Length: 453
Image (cartoon, rainbow, N blue to C red; front, side, top):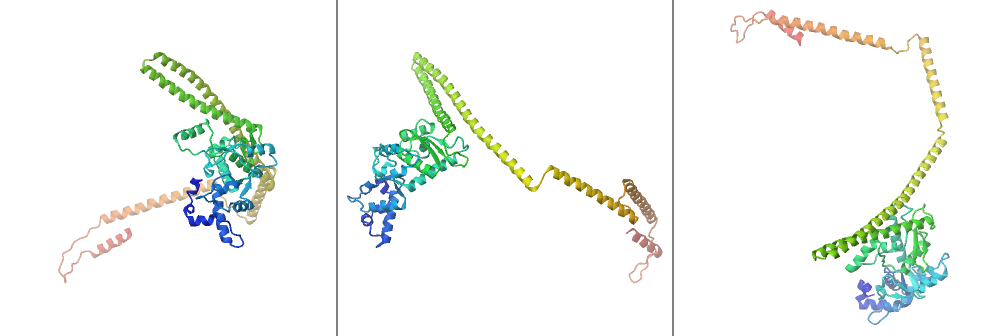
């Protein structure tokens, strides 16, 4: 209790707490104060506990010798709103016999998160005034379902559990080295500890059943024997012999795995002891340790073989489920394709008929074209290969002949230019200009240069 209220800043404020400890005013008279106090106390009552003893709330929240006077009002309001439900009513259901309800409610249980009520792992008997905190139950149920869904790969094997699932999802806080070692043991399957009590687990399971998210089978003492989560439409809302068999394989495999780990540890210890005995010149003791090691090693091999067999069986079960799902997908695809083909009229006979009709139409069209060509006196306009080859050869020869004539003309022009020479005549000064001899030759040279260009 002290740990809880220590986190509330208002708890150390005497003036504020004096107002909160007073009786509730009439709601019609002062609704604002009424709602403010109700929010404060409902926040405390819904602080991560699955159930509360409504008759003892005033004493549990005592402060400096005073107890709050309005707890009856808080409980009544929460029951009206449905956030508090009497424990026996919550656990009662048409599928549950009244005999184990009575046994469950009045049998000794350890209360979850007992620090709120000042107890530490103590046994106690829930009385008739116990109520379930519905919001907290719903929140933790969602957490449990989400964990199972996130870690599931095969619906046939990964949605069936025993009570150890509560220890996995809601582990007991580890505060010492020994408790941390115990948590490691939990993961290996040697121990199963949860911060949830048996009563908490029963409340949580009842909510899952009521919300159609799980089916549960109980032991004679009311504890959880099997819980099957219904998080997929393909999962049957019943516990089958296959479910029980799969759970047996899984739990046995987990137990054998824990034994393998223990045997491996024991072998290491025996080997170390033999070495220490030899160092101390205790040869006979060392031989004894080695004989024990050989015996344990033989047992280890058997356990490893057993674990391999169990894991192989489980793997084949999962593979069979996958094969079944693939086959169902094939069937769905086949049915869908057939429906599409039937709806669109896509059949072999129809395809053959359409192609035959197309060929007939194309043949008719070609005959019409030929008939028109004959009437108009024109050919079909299509040249055969021989005509095309002849035309191509003619073009090639024409290009070659033209090239030869061009080369001959150029060569003749070059020769003629080589025979020309510019002759210097006597120069005379005529106003600073020079006169060139043979103007006729220069004009001819100019004409030849123009032809070349």
